[in-house]
Length: 165
Image 1 (cartoon, one colour):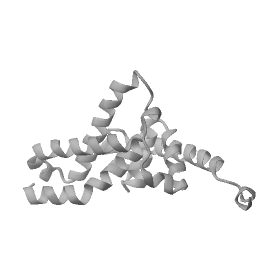
Image 2 (cartoon, helix red, strand yellow):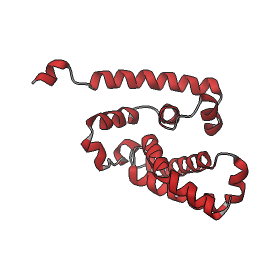
Image 3 (spheres, one colour):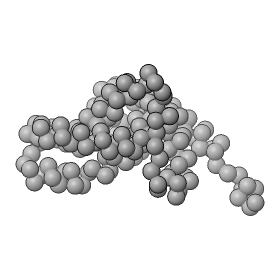
Image 4 (cartoon, one colour):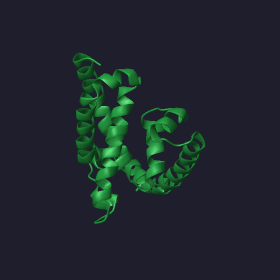
């Protein structure tokens, strides 16, 4: 990958990758840091990225692994949910806030699968490759994650009577 191709990759995918990682981790600041660090590592491996076929997936996977490494150090002190930060747009859209809270309640593997499928628009086969999990496991994580999200979101939505008040 040439420098101009890398710059285009960065320009077109940085914000999207931060949003995707934020949906997986619950921390906007950490997502920005991890994606930035992943791009630094991608620059160092840019020649291999051109052969990889999907440099954005490589950066996303690397950023996710960086976030997991950071969690391991922090988890001894406090859970991930207590470390999450909420950007301003969540306060402006209560539906987005409800979705992020529901995602935060999912186990990490289910949350990652749901985000990769529904936010990143990856197929089950692509998710299996990116997460090093069998396709059947990815399907199970998606099914369980969707079921849990449906239950959580259906109980958190206001009723029509509450809307009239």
